[in-house]
Image (tube, rainbow, N blue to C red; front, side, top):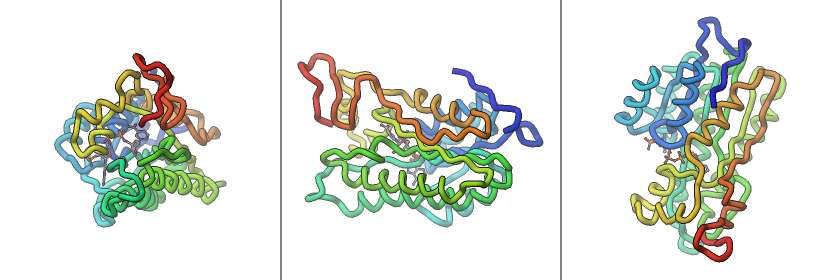
Length: 264
Ligand code: NAP
């Protein structure tokens, strides 16, 4: 779907800047491409610079190193982005699927650092630029894990519940200022998400989507770009988007199975 930037959102030079974190793969990469297609100058941030450079080159954007878990990396990144109208806080993910009784401290720490602290750090650093633009928009990629839970998912769902709480708080704190806040909550999307969660085990990752059609990264990017291109008096608070075959985090209708399976 093709969306157009409303006239009021065009900055003096005519091409507003959009920043996308975690833009080296999956939803972030698709969002960077979609934003560029509708006329944004896109600044992409992530750790894997080879991937980032290739995508930035393809869309005429700028790829900058960013580790959202590292305060000095966020500060250096923000210093190189003096102008920004849109911030898509997308960097994040899950690690492991262990029950709480076997939880690994390091996995939980990384998930919290990335999905919660990272989102807070980048938002705090870019807020002055977003506000200065007169038409700022913060889009947080949370998840249905922000309001659902499932066995083995506590580390991830706890982090995404927190990210959702931060997003909702931001909307209260920024009320009356030229800033919009949107929460995007996808269900199952086939990206590198499950490969990362299962520490590189592609067979295990593929099983997550067996017998069902997951969302693509482009499906989620489409929701983000739609929210961003509404007239500025409109705030899209939340978009929950799932595959048709998914009702909850654990209830998925898979072909070849008699009833909706509730295995993750
Ligand atoms: P993905 O393909 O694994 O992408 C994750 C992105 O986050 C990568 O670009 C990765 O880049 C970046 N990232 C991870 N840690 C980072 C860090 N410390 N600093 C900067 N960037 C970091 O997975 P995805 O599905 O597109 O995930 C994007 C977002 O959607 C995540 O927040 C995820 O929780 C959320 N989400 C995903 C699903 C799903 O089913 N896939 C569903 C709901 C929500 P580098 O490794 O290069 O840094």
